Image 1 (tube, rainbow, N blue to C red):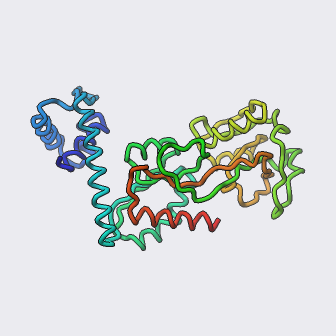
Image 2: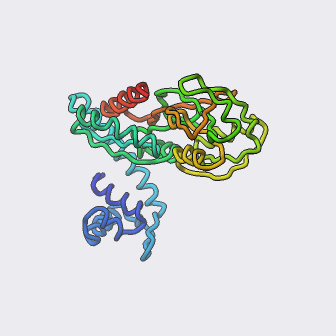
Image 3: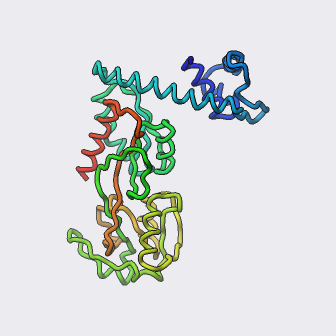
Length: 302
């Protein structure tokens, strides 16, 4: 297989449109169409159902896509292994990063990663945990930085950087805030059932944090009054600071005291993993290992 040709066909399938694919590939539509026609002639069958606005894969096209993606992955793994053998400190690394924390982690450690592996082609992609897991299973991500409970793991590999407790937060003006420990002291433990009639702001239902929170409320025996759902973890703290509602949030986001928040541990002390995941059959090149090392150092320094 011609890998450049593979990339052309994959882009048509990704865009569902040959004009858009040509624009993304910075080639003319005519040149891209010639490549496709050449391949279809070689295979003896069309790969796409063509229409003016939507190109869909035929059954033969779907089979080609499966083999094409595997071929590109084999090429990538082979090159990365050779680069490591000769200590070239190059290759490619596609990283999935959770919004917020993941991007901050990357900006903090990338300068050193670049100094140590200046020839490494790094492609960071902002993705939530479940899309990362799906992309890892498809071979589209080399590694993913994610936060999740053990119950949310897939069959791929997980390297735990650390354990993190989830913290209950309420506005400092709430009557129950008087029970909070002073800054610098261990957090007071609070029974979440004391807040069963209070409104909560929570992550949306596609979040791994929401899955953990739902189990907490189920264990406590009540359904929370949800004032607002968000897809931004840091936004939960801001909502609790500015409104009369409560939230459950990872320690990372409230590790520094705020005069507008009261922080509590929960009786069950729920924790989840801060982890790096990678394909069970994948190859971690030296650049990926260096990223993991730096991510571990970053977590340990918090």
